[in-house]
Length: 254
Ligand SMILES: [Zn+2]
Image 1 (tube, helix red, strand yellow):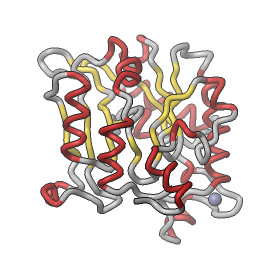
Image 2 (cartoon, helix red, strand yellow; image 1 turned 30 degrees about the vertical axis):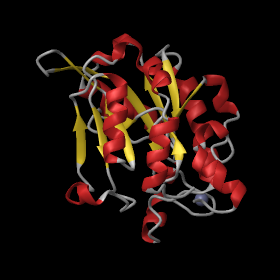
Image 3 (cartoon, rainbow, N blue to C red; image 1 turned 180 degrees about the vertical axis):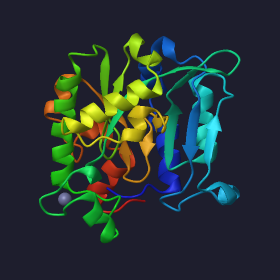
Image 4 (cartoon, helix red, strand yellow; image 1 turned 120 degrees about the vertical axis):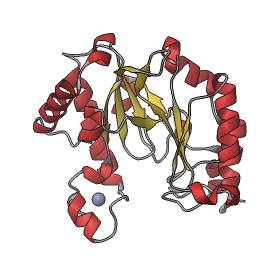
């Protein structure tokens, strides 16, 4: 896992980005969805013409379908693409929010690397190891089962680092901040290392399924519930972009 270059981002979004699958992901829920890009905040890899905006969150709310979204992504070549979980009405007022849970490997207490605090002390706050990845996969599976009693339309997405659990039940869009916070704390107390700000709604951006996570060169991949049991982010070809598949055979990337 490594940073993707600009040429690789371009190759991915030109040839591999599955906007058909993305359209299926949104179904009839894409109305007025906003998208967001970050050019080079973590990787420091960016197009010169956007130098001033490397860390800016660029919001895309003017577009003509997903083909146009792809075109705009190819123009910016960002390290990360997100969508806004908020729902808006025609006047731009927020009318609800998709509920989500974010489980990241760096929040796992690793038997080798310790707690997140230990990792930050060593300057490894954003890195993670195979053990943490495996532990976070199991936690995600457990969280799915834990929430099954409450929600019925859940989707798991591999984010390139950890996992996101999206709740698509209609009733969950109307939860207020207090209810979301209560749910987040309940889930934390049950032993799950989730990002409270994502669940409470404070962080409303979430990685766009099928986009490229340019920090690790992995494709953000929705998974069936049964797939999470055996999913392996290191070897699963569906989340490995072609430029990396190639380089693994040739020994180096072009
Ligand atoms: Zn570790």
